[in-house]
Length: 268
Image (cartoon, rainbow, N blue to C red; front, side, top):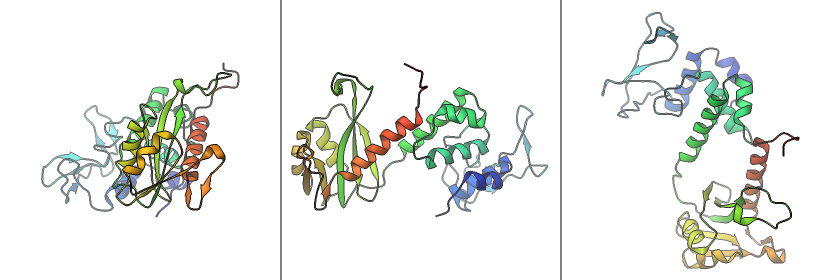
């Protein structure tokens, strides 16, 4: 798998046309596909001057256009993507995309604003669109093998008043050991919510590991095998049965949130 870096992209993407070609290679791999009818065999619309074309407003653009031989509609590589209709340079989009997928602790909109000299609203809009695209990507199949499940609570910190779970939202994560993870905001942490959510995410024959929370008790009736570890008696692993993978995932989520949305030390 090819890897990218900011310096290599800065060298390769000197112009907007370069950025379009880069995305075309990633998305189509040499065979343009019409986003309107999904046909192949489109042909490139070469600008009259060879490099740029004039828009309806009279501005010059290096946007690379294609025309479908089947439906006869024009399109570009950003048609029907998070960049569709954008006024932000595609080069900027590519750099922001790389930062958001490569940064372990996430990237705040304010950071994008400062680095790429866009307005706060534009930076917020870009980061929201990219995050929405990440969320909308459907899982291709159910999880299998050994799957771990657990819930974390997201919300305001409380001081001197216990855990304050009433003010927090439960987020349930099902993670395929050595594979993918799926997180869902849940209405509560009862068995009526947890059991169908977890059982509906795993394939037949899958072993599921959870902690000893009572909300998972009925899971054994809906999956091939349900094992638990009892954290209350400091049982963290029993042979291959452990929830360390999902606990590690939650740790990274928390670090990502605090690392991305960092407030001023003088704020209250």
